[in-house]
Length: 106
Image (cartoon, rainbow, N blue to C red; front, side, top):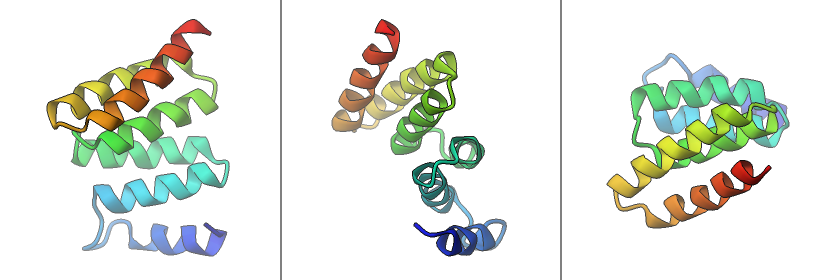
């Protein structure tokens, strides 16, 4: 996404369309643009609204790992696996389990 797209998403935050999906979209765009720190902030907003959002947990773990905080990444992946498993999102749970094992080996 471009900087303009990110700004359009930011403009929607705090309005009637604000919610976990908007925050996840913004965080994903920020992370793809290389701003893991800002992505983490937005993902925390998404997860405050919906702690069972397994895709947000996965990106949060990746963002923490990219920012060099492996302990926070491990915690995010563990919580994400729990949320994904509880809601039958088996593929997300498997993906996070792989990422978790990689971090634990490092």
